[in-house]
Length: 211
Image (cartoon, rainbow, N blue to C red; front, side):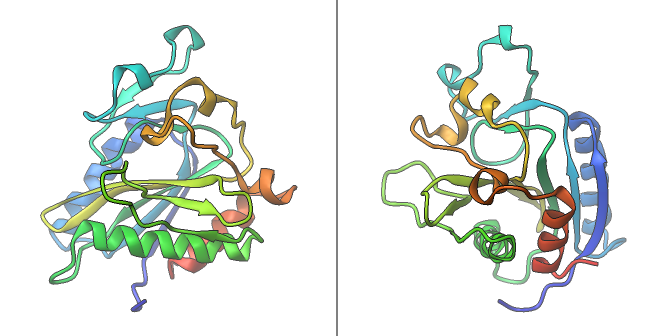
């Protein structure tokens, strides 16, 4: 991969809708060349996010009490919560580069970060006619550990990835994540035992050349 250093913003727990407001402001700044390429690392309180493509049958039962919020990214339903590291990527695409090209790079950088954390991982190509296999899977246990959903506007990306570090995985079982009924979601802690958000944040920042 070519070098692509990013400016780093770090936060702890940020409400999802408030984060979207700030992300939109960061995107506008990047479109106007008022800020460099940026990665924003944070976490959210428990929330399911869905897109226009999400089927009604994939939604959680409202009685579980976890909010469901419409979002403008690509992909399908996903879950965010404490113990998950979210990375929003505000990056100006290079000439001839599309958002799918950049997603491939994001996946590979996350594979590198997971290797640093002791989790052998891989990205996958999508077979013809299948649900888009964006994200990262563990090699040894064949579980999904990172969800990726992005878009681009005026050549600047937004949204990003969600890496399960050490949070509660049970909410994933309340809905159909990523449009994949049979997917088994996992975390760094589930794969290798004790870990910390600080370790994960550092590994991801290094993999994305962020400072």
